[in-house]
Length: 271
Image 1 (cartoon, rainbow, N blue to C red):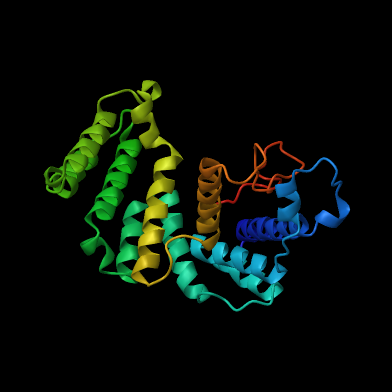
Image 2: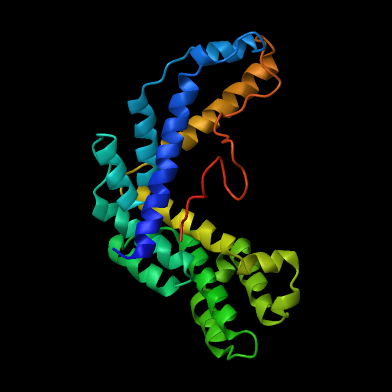
């Protein structure tokens, strides 16, 4: 295992351990905190006890769904939990996402076809999104002053026949082709977004979800559904006005340190 892989694995595990320990502390903090200034609802929340095993299961589920095979395997061992998917299955998804994050879209498409041959045949919007991203990468390589021939040929042969099928396809292709016309150092913000890592991340997430769905797995981590349900519940209760709630209810994942980190730890690396 390379030093970079070791670093990423330790970063992912540090992330998982931090969230697990922090949630555990949040759930057991009522006995050691000052009660006089607390809202009644906050006191009720602190009295709810959540099993550490349940928290660890959520963390393992996230590592599995997001595609971190080494971190998921090591965390499942540390937390004494059964793996949710074989490491080989998670690794296959991770490899495809890595190709996309690195801009190696042709390799990603080949790997996806080897893993789940029917996905791109059945999901035309996903196939178009991958091909469009491949065109963006070809254009990126051709500028400034490079050969735009490969990008033009790819657009004509791979995207041209698909674009007229929906207005969105056509709009996306026209927008992407604009990158051949304008100076990349002075692009309109909407065009500049195409060259930022966000587009790669967006497509990688879509591909990961498509693979999970094809394998009859959940498309999203359970913790995402819990957060969405919590936000929905709060909105409903506030609208009904039947229960006194604090003016703000935090998720409780804020750490003490905030310089260059998210929630008290380094951001999860996805490349």
